[in-house]
Length: 497
Image (tube, rainbow, N blue to C red):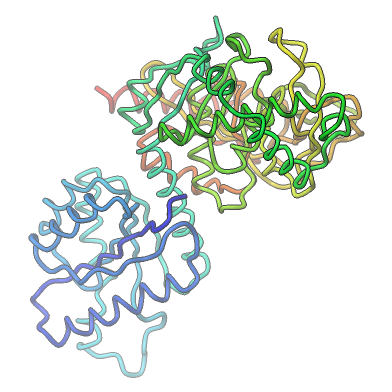
């Protein structure tokens, strides 16, 4: 996530109350923001803005928020009564995500001393309702959080939204580099790139695979050997790949891929990328180790030219803490029993080591696909944790985000002959229901697996992006889910006309 991200805290009032009351509003507004910010954490800091009291002040602060690249969202609160017609022009110009905080300075009523002065000062109970009316009438997308700023539940919901704002900010500036094209004849990994840029801001840019191959050829042996020494320091490296080992040159070539890839991505301002084993040009290996290490640094990736999943990996990583567990993934094969049915997820070579706290092992093995030299890769098993898999699909007339809650578990037995990074999970509510619902929704075989981003953050992101989101969880039944898809279809057809 970017350094210096801010969420602006904007409080509404009006001049009717007089200077003394407005001075109290000013002090209490700062106090409420500080109470919220003291335990908020997350990807951004709260930035207090002077209380707005006129249409001109409201529009000015919103236009300033729009123009500030560090501002990823705004929190608004009507401390007193702020007549909502004052907000129309400002709200019409708003381009940043909004959270409407329905709160008040005092947690408890001062029952024994409350008087009309207190009532005139603390009017959020109806001031926010006036404001919410105009938000609804203008169809302003926002999250509403109700409660005192020191309530842990309130703080948690605001934090979830703040992470969604960070994801939206990432999407707005996201550039995806596609080395080669989409895997031939595959439908779900393709899509409408212009519509994606219009809706999410992401730019999908094609690069010939030999742009990468030529850059690899330009990397010096000295630079690659230096990186190989770093590998040996950080990871458990197979003996034959170590310096002096029989296959060390393969690790050197893998290091050259990483150096070349990093250089291209940094020079082009790319935050995500794809490769395609059908189109490797003069590359000697399918990129594996390099992809895993770049993903661990926050880059998005997906295979076979799947730009939507690559973008979602980058966006989801932006919505997670810096040490969050998030990776490109694919439902590969099933365990139907005995015991609880499970999914074995992997993707040839490219699974992010953020999924484990153990030290990955760098190994070399045949790939059996692509017709190139044996590639190097990290091998590990994802740590057990609650999480979710998600994907973004293009339905032709709109996009849909699909989320399935899962529990990552230890493999039922050891996997001594599977030389790739992998994760095993139990989908909710069950493998049979989740798979049926996922396929009813048109979900991709490529996904993002995250143990760090909450369902609420994903729902907040979808709301900001005005994108359909369907969730498969403990309460899902196949019939009800099918009906939800039908109702959603009717809604989006009607609202897009």
